[in-house]
Length: 125
Image 1 (cartoon, rainbow, N blue to C red):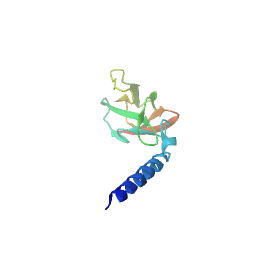
Image 2 (tube, one colour; image 1 turned 135 degrees about the vertical axis):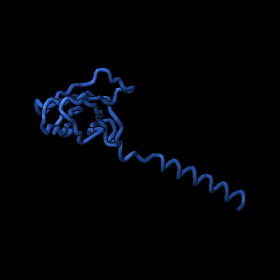
Image 3 (cartoon, rainbow, N blue to C red; image 1 turned 180 degrees about the vertical axis):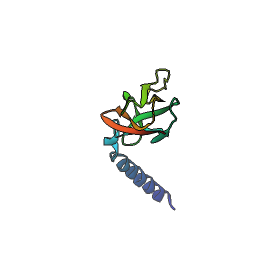
Image 4 (cartoon, rainbow, N blue to C red; image 1 turned 30 degrees about the horizontal axis):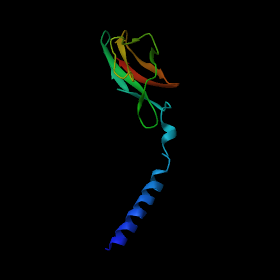
């Protein structure tokens, strides 16, 4: 290829690269807006007196964890649930729940954060 051909090819590549870089990100509207709660488990099996923990986080449309306040509540008295104050992730994009089985039942632990709601089902025979 001649010197002139390489020069023309370089100019065309520069123009195409510039035009291609001007496109906007079609997924940018998903950034930073809570879209889902991601939880470590969907079901947990416990025996009366046993306890366990699980984590949850709020994510945006690209599944990037967000620094949202997350709370856990029990759907019935058969399970005692609290936020684990000893859990301090960096960055603070998740929260851990402590769950203790009090009596036999099937209960849901409600997870709320970022205007969203989800649950983990607890089975206690």
